[in-house]
Amino acid sequence: MTERTLILVKPDGVERGLTGEILRRVEAKGYRIAELKQLNASTEQLAAHYAEHEGKPFYQPLMDFMLSGPVVAAVIEGDRVIEGFRSLAGTTDPTTAAPGTIRGDLGRDWGEKVQKNLVHGSDSVESAEREIGIWFA
Ligand code: IDP
Ligand code: MG
Image (tube, rainbow, N blue to C red; front, side):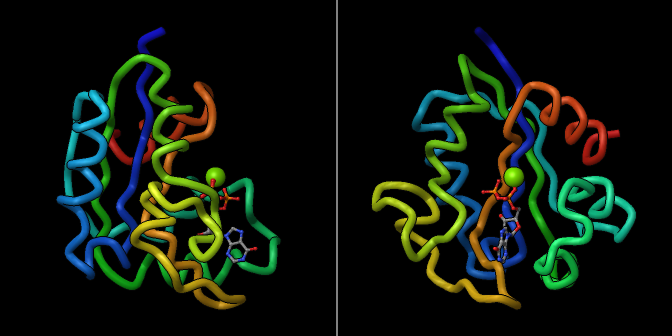
C-alpha cells in the first residue's frame, strides 16, 4: 500500500554532512522524496512532535539536542514506507543498531543526556499524518 511518512535528519546528521548519504539510502531503496526542506525547529514544533515523550527522563535533553542546530525534514512516499524507513533507520540506540542501517552504520553517540541517532521516522499511519502536519503545515 502506498504510504507517506515524515523523516527528519536530526542536528547531528546535518552537522556531520550526512544528509545526502541518508537521502541517498532512501532513494536507493526506491522511495520518492515528495517534500524536503532544512529548518531550525521551534520549541512549539518539537513539543508537538515529541508530545508522547513528555515527562520521560530523556525529554528535555532530547528537546535541547533537537534545538541545537538545523534539521532536514522530508516527506517520503512508497509502498509500506513507514515500516520500510524504520527498517532502514535501525533501532533507537545506534551502538547496537544493526550494521547496514543508518543508525548502525553511521551513528554511535548515545547517553542519558545525548541522543544522537541521526534520524526520525514516523511509526504509524496516524503519527505520519500528524507529524507531516507539524513540519509541512
Ligand atoms: P525512535 O526514534 O527509534 O522511534 P523513540 O522511542 O520514539 O525512538 O524516542 C524518540 C527519540 O528520543 C529517540 O530517537 C532518541 O533520540 C530519544 N530517546 C529515546 N529513548 C531514549 C533513552 O532511553 N535515552 C535517551 N534518549 C532516548
Ligand atoms: Mg519514535
